[in-house]
Length: 259
Length: 259
Image (cartoon, rainbow over all chains, first blue to last red; front, side, top):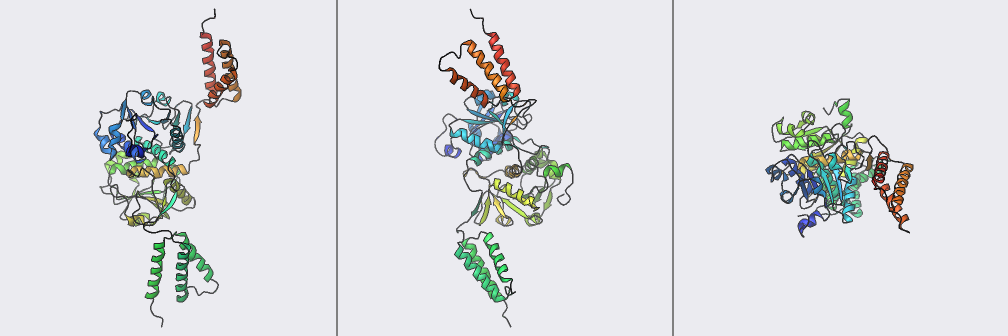
């Protein structure tokens, strides 16, 4: 699978160069399946398994994969961590605690960028995850270029295996995502332009003038400004401007006749 | 629990102002428990449940919480989403798809910062998560100030409920984490200083001169520079410099006597 990755949809989705996820001696099928789902959520599709505890294929893993069974089917099996990383050029070790070794330690965010940089330079990359109960052994960590540690609550820092895979996969994806941090969804409409907003403001102010709401001398300009600010802040769509003008017109007509 | 959060360890760990996680009509106890674990991993401790499908307490949730049972025990129950958010000042809706509504959409990263900003201003914050099968209803989304959407593989974008909670909790924590992105762990040692590195370089070069390795005319300066660069890149500790000097000394003594 890794050597002859198919052309077409799957390769496109994952993007050439996405990191291999290497699970060393995973214990629970549920976690393997959830890890596969998390991988596919973020465009990773290459899982490698080093001596999983339970027999393979694993029904619990398939059930938890919830649509990402393909990743389990294509997972390659290895007898040792060294064999599992042999073809990779840059390897990170995901571990909660570094025990008595001098190591470079990256945050997941830095790791996501670093893995992208390696992939851009055509270096094949992977991330090692240890067994649920004990985490990676020091000898496995020593096969890696750096450690990646998820910053967490010091009193409860141990992440579930699939959750740890998710954080790394998420940061890999985020490092390549050029979308805006803050955007508007505008189905079947567009942001209102300033002329439309001015039309709304004048419609409202005219109605409020007529009703006497803005008649307090010296306060009118402040009230108008506050109302305009409020509607500006809302980032109105052209559709919403029309809706609000309909609201104003309706309220004006519903007013009991003056007597 | 929320109104009279205890002083002491728990409040300190969570940090005042951490967002409430509001699960609307969650279906699977496993996901509720995994969400609780993910929350505690990142210092969130306030879970609110709106009409969970199964009876409460829920054994599957407790088993999956794996140490975070306290969050389940303290979870408050509500009959409606509106009641569950009534005391909050800023609410995000986590949803994979925004359906036919004009909404502000934040990435989880922006959401983490925004939630911190609100909390700094003493605004109580929360994040809504919908049921596994359907996600949040539009009426629930309309109770929120903005939508938060996890950037993901467009062909497989639906995150497991607990995984979605994890991403938000992780970004909340990361937004308040001032630690370095890239660091060295140096147990019982410190980074080597330049004098120690020069001592290593000269030791090595002296040994290589004596062995004839550096005797090719015109190449010595390049080889010396390359070797020095290589060891500089490794970011050696003082302990490692001593180890390497021991390695050199051993190799020199092991050399067969010249004849």
